Length: 226
Image (cartoon, rainbow, N blue to C red; front, side, top):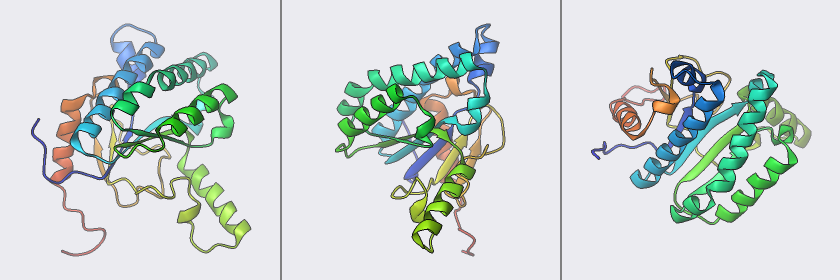
């Protein structure tokens, strides 16, 4: 597959459109979430194949807790099932798995599964797959500011939950929405953004490759003059 010479180190994706995809196919929203997992597998595989070092996915926001309880429960079950099923694939592809967010709101069972897979993959040196669960950018900045004040620090960045990981070079949002929805408010300050009309369950390798070509055409100046 033809790829640009200039690839991002870290791609972050706001996975949007599962519900609309399900509605267009005459199914319940939860069916769209299940199909979206196939896109997660496809894009993770692509990043591993193409040498992208970091892929982060906005899987569940703090605001998503306000959705109907049945949908929240289904999402949590899907996440648990997916985590349990991906061990062999991640080990085979040398993927390191990380979950970031307000994990105190997740169930003990899900947290245990997360910790297990994170531990099992911690020594892998290929792609780092970061999944944001129960996350919001405002929450992240608030908790970082509180910890910084308590410790007498003077630099916020080391207190963010993303400390130690590079900021995203490219943020992609699917489904045609053109907003960042309280995601990586600090970290995406100089990211390139691509908004695509493709719904997340339809976003596979070809769509991802197109986004990478668009990224490669950008001139990143970080506020400077070239």
